[in-house]
Length: 239
Image: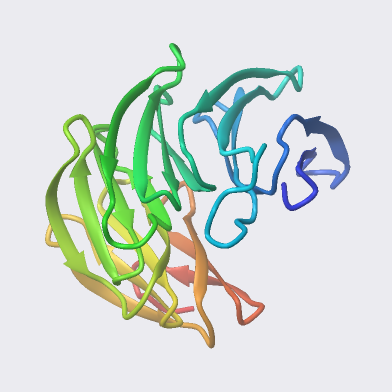
């Protein structure tokens, strides 16, 4: 877990006790994600802007930490405004970052170099996920559209109209057959990947800000600003 105190806290999921605290960011930590093998933790940061401009000394970085040692092993720099979200490729070799500077950047985890960058002209990229082939990237923003990019050349290859208003979350099922989106319109939608068609609509009473599949792809979770976390069956679409 992480937040406005600029610290990352790692917890034991069985005991609920804190294992270690990581210090290095200078601003609010906006997002975090583990590598697929669980050995590394990626964190994204960005401070509050003043009059639409970043404050001097703001931290708009993505940092990589060793989970076992708690040490920072890499820092990706390039964004000029807060980094809002990150996504890790399924092979763990690439990390994508989305920022309020309206760019999406993809970084090579091993070399630490920026491997590609493209502009996102639809409000800041508020939700992202790598496609299982690790070449295509789902990116969503304020216009309710999910766009699919070939991140190697920044070319948009497809799009779907998913929600009314901003999309806050997207996740792809481990079986690669489904994906789910969560939006400011108070719904989560389950999609069939092959046809890009809606399979079920799952209502909340406020914006849906986080979504995640179970490892077997048989269920998915949605979290909302209505204060609830709900578990849904992927086959029936029922809670």
